[in-house]
Length: 459
Image: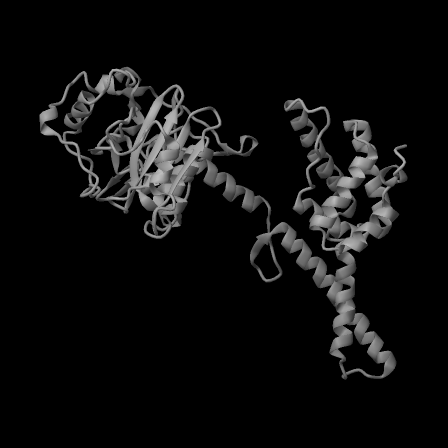
């Protein structure tokens, strides 16, 4: 997650960001996301706007602030939890949009990426869970609401509402921010979200400043030397976002340090597990080492064969480089598509291609069922799958009829699809994405598809 730190709160936000000033947002049409988008979109060079519906209801909207183009407004409207109105740097608009639309990490962010999804706070996403195409959600302590903070009321007379035209983002959190929160509370309207539902922060002992760790503590959690961590100036993107920036450097909560170390160790140990030593003494992936050793033997054998051939012709010492290159290249080329002792497991690739095509067909049928359509509309086979189909067809032409036949057979038995429909999809997808020209694809289909997939009489 790329954490965006806002620079101010909109006055009509339901979830104020601690320490930031409040800005008069009356020019924003907060009930009309399209109008927010139009405020900046296509209104001039350097201006932009966007709005999108959220998958679970509600919407997000963004616009460059026309009176102060260094900044942009970001609005999140939740169907249950109200609105969040933030002022951010204009260059952060796309990152904030991505976090809200696709991040799967809630919509309120505090302390270097701690996030709230409407039910609980969670630690920053650091440990990847690819089964859910996101990060493992790790909950923390309770939320702190505006009502909680206002039990110790500030003095609104000591605060002010900023105006956007002359606004400059503060470098430090505002002192006595409770006074500003108290002033914000006086602007709440009768139909605004109740203060006890206005989430401001989280109450987590791990975030207390004296419990945070520095680079040495982060290195200790990862079981590496501090000098082996990414460079503090140039490698910060490889480190977790800090929970606190101090004059002495960034500070992290211990659980965040442990989560980062967990992911760091997993990647590092996996790399070590699958690495080997080349003949040059360098560490490389095991597959590269094996391929290099394999090719070395093939080329060495080829050189010996070339020398023997020249000896027989009495031309030793008069190397024909083109002939030698051709000889040397032949067996590596064979090895790439020879399933017996080659680099590519061709039989396994064939099985994978069948399952890839069938998986796409199954998705199309499932989608048709969800939309109550009586017949599935088969979408084009993915371009990457066609690329592998090309590779197989061009190296195993004799095996292509068997491959197409098994695809049609399994699609009929497993998915109830007629071979003619599957054959038509193969033809269409290859014509769209194959490196073969259209005439060659048509000829291939007539030769390689089973008769039931090409028959025009309906039987």
